[in-house]
View 1 (cartoon, rainbow, N blue to C red):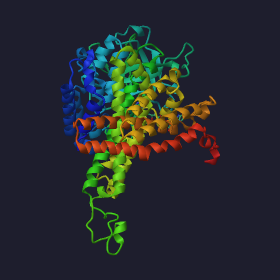
View 2: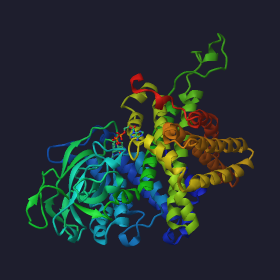
View 3: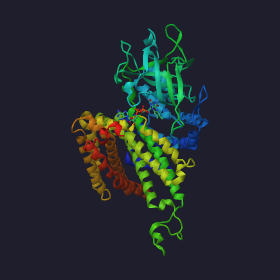
Length: 626
Ligand SMILES: Cc1cc2nc3c(=O)[nH]c(=O)nc-3n(C[C@H](O)[C@H](O)[C@H](O)COP(=O)(O)OP(=O)(O)OC[C@H]3O[C@@H](n4cnc5c(N)ncnc54)[C@H](O)[C@@H]3O)c2cc1C
């Protein structure tokens, strides 16, 4: 089953992505060029990714004492992705990019996430290189970023440490100037780094000539101590292999050593590593004496102590990327379970009567079996998946469109987009991570016992998806960011902007007889979220307000998704009037909208109740009572 018609509808009929060509930056583009990108990505995903999804799961990366070995399929997928130009899709033409809108880039990457989420780690390389294009020097862009865009080098993001995950202020990796002339290095001020980085995705492999680590580390103050908190954190480029000013490998290995591979629940196609920086395994000649000494060479990016600011520059896009991956894993499970449900005969219809009265409970053996898609409960599970996954895809595309607005719209619209994105990003990351994972669980359920085996793909989708609530800021951290910061920032203007957009949809939907009931429900939900936000902060005590941050985020997310579905339903109605789309697709969208309003939105009452009463049942329970 292709998700292309769903994508086309959302992009072109709901979001009017074609109108982006009116912006100067995208003037050379049109629906034809966007579609050509989708055709290419769909083909590569079908040929180089999907057939190998199980292989990368069963043939986990392993270390032979010298190298990390990955299946040949991973090498082939990497080559094909790099050749497609997707690594630099949104970059300027001068850098070899396509100047694609981010909306189109994000949508194109969805094909790969659905086919095999872990076979490629192109998004990390792109994120790394994009960051350097904004914060790096001209030389850093030329030597590191451009070689990443071409696929010759790959990139990582090294934030986490064994003792510092959610709390990056506790990072202990240390960076000290590499001799007296450290500032004169053409690749950037040269430091020596020592420390351990945990959980680093794609931290070691042989897919590319070199691996460019972007590493957060602290430069000690004059007293030799690390500055406490996030203030002291700086950002460094640490190549696995040393390069010259033309990007050529010098033959010297940098002092970055693989300490071990992590063996994960899912997402096994991507290596995940513990890296030791500067332990002396690969001493590097120092600039002054030329004597080989321990310490990983790192080149400062941006100014000292501004590392987190630089790193988080790309955060919105990284989080939309995680949300899209979660969405597409959910979608893959939905399609697999839909196909299964259409083909699996089991049981008989409830009702319909029979001579012995057994027909009422579906036990009349004289009746032929039906396919399970005919059972109401299986339909419920399929419709839930559709509502979660297609709704999440719409949200991700909406947020991606906001990124384009932020970068290319006029000043006021750009600023509104920036602030709206601030508020919506925790939802874009977390909502699909939770609910498209639930979709994967339902996909297993639709398969019955077969879903619990490795003979069907759905268990892998669930395992792969389970990561998304953990990395890029855990669920709990995202929720505290939403309620503790985002809805309050700039006097609550972000929340007001969102409310204005929701109200505009409510107003339109009120005019449509099919949607008026939902419009009223959404208006009420918005009001509930608003008053719960105020009530949570009524005492001004963060311990009380944030004790139920996750239920708040769940309610907020469900309200946002209800809005998205209502808006999509409006677009579907208008497309239907002009007979642009199939009757079945329209019925599907209206059904998913109704499902969301009848089965999902009412849940927000329970979630918000504990928020607005600042319920401390969990927070106050003494440790010994657990
Ligand atoms: C497969 C995988 C790939 C990864 N890739 C990378 C990568 O490429 N680069 C990188 O830098 N990192 C990466 N990470 C690390 C990831 O970002 C961290 O695992 C994540 O930030 C959580 O940190 P932690 O594991 O130390 O858990 P902790 O921070 O110890 O959290 C444990 C639990 O406590 C909760 N918690 C922690 N602090 C608070 C608080 N203040 N209030 C309320 N609850 C709290 C968390 O929500 C969580 O539920 C990856 C992780 C995995 C598993």
